[in-house]
Image 1 (cartoon, rainbow, N blue to C red):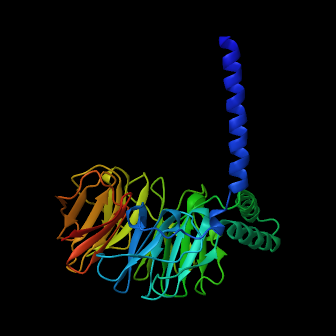
Image 2: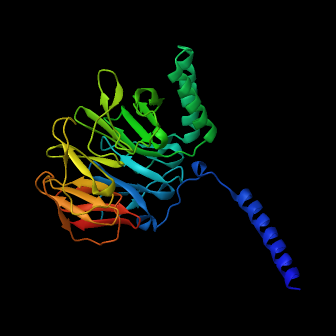
Image 3: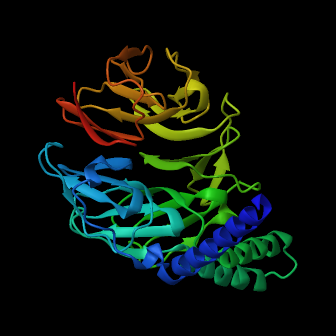
Length: 356
């Protein structure tokens, strides 16, 4: 009898599973075709990035949520977004024009300071662009093994579909910019995102490591990656060449302090260079967790945040840091200073405004 009951339960479970599977398959909707749902809870949902569009704050996060505030974070409005992919980064080179990137290879553009967004690129399109571009490039030099390898890689990206995320975006102005992401994905535009061109052949990243962040400070454009890989744009050749640093772990981001460019990453590691990367100075921090975000206020105070929720501040250009009181255990994934008055922080619990 017991055996019979087990057989019956197994059969019923299998039937239920199959029924659910059919129902789920019938109800499946591609996030690339599903506009982000308007929700009053969006302000409390996980957000990954925040920036300024002029005086307006713009934040982006999961399910295509993009929020904006015109009163220093006191109140927020949800933007109109044509898809519901998770977003990882948002950047505005001008008060009006901004870009957001994220999972499924999406690139979004706003021309109205973040109130509405249109899709410029997704992972399916990116794969086709890569394959067409490198197939044409290989045809110009059939004996070039590097080009053949790029064709193979482009074919894999195209076959995989929209499954690889972009992790960061940076624009020098409203026409010229880069998007970078997992497995070495990198595209460039010179026409505001109307067209995108892959740049893999111009990046010294033979292992296809994740490109975690890209920023331009003055004439220097720099990317950070895994295994201590830091790449800087050589203006003469148009190629991203490796820069030697003291750390062989993962870097997550870049910052600009009073003493030059900075890098931060795993195990509380952070470095600054005042001579374009020829020499690096390690910042002495009172934490050893992964550093996840940075900001600088109008007075030049530098802030760093880690995955455990610690907030550090430096008033001497990064020479020394002090730990500041804030809600411990609340990780910060993005931060921006609003004048001298407050820091706007985003993370797994949405938006917080921290007076300074």
